[in-house]
Length: 395
Image (cartoon, rainbow, N blue to C red; front, side, top):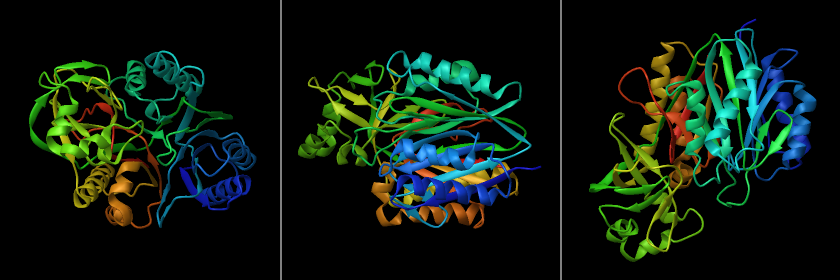
């Protein structure tokens, strides 16, 4: 039996009925009596426990992970209220789930270690192909969990995923692992066996102005840039509008003008959202920043964002060498959706044009994305990114 994939969704306002309808459609599309693995996305309008219970009634003992999102991306539309399920049944692929519902409030790096080990134990002896994970997108610094995963899997092992979101309410996000509903935690799915697992990401932002150096950094907090308070960089470019950054939540200014950290080896800019400005002018970033790195303010256009989606899809097509993926999962920054506005679906049309109009798509809008950069050479390092679009192709 080869790999069978189905995608179902529902906009029923009732949590149980919507989950049951989405899971039933996904299972029917697999044309198989049982489902081995399920990926679940739903917007914040639905009750998490009811969603999980109803999906379990339909999919039985399938390995299951998922996350809340601000919007569900589908092949034919973008829905800001929906429950969606991707179901996989396969004789070629094997799956192992792991979660850390008790570890994210402590040492986050060790939580990443534990997450990887639990998924490996659940997978068993099968050859490992890749790992997909979901974290709480409200964590101010989730970079250490990736470091923890890489200590177990290796620095270039394919890892993709996203931070669960709640449509810029910044109150609470949820993650799913098997029969548990979690919050402020992380979960992951380890895929093994034989098949194509290709993941890539782009942001499409460009640097502004001359290079500056983040000469004093404490993890995810930039203390000084070129010996000055980091906030002065925004004051220089934005003038009085820079005051909009001083917010407890991700402000419009932070979305329009994130920071870019040049990674010399990858020849790429790592985008970091500024989530807070401290009283001393330090910038709190949503992810770690290497001390001594070159820093720029970044900006984008709708054309450059759509081009990033095109480049991701083209890389997937080249990796599959003419074969069509059986499904593509999209992890995309919610900030990109806000920036693109009515043009957001043009990205989806672009992906379909390149990968084939019949390729099933399912995606979520996230707070932070996990993916490798498109860097020189076959070995690509994994990074926590922001304002990116990430494609995971299954074949």
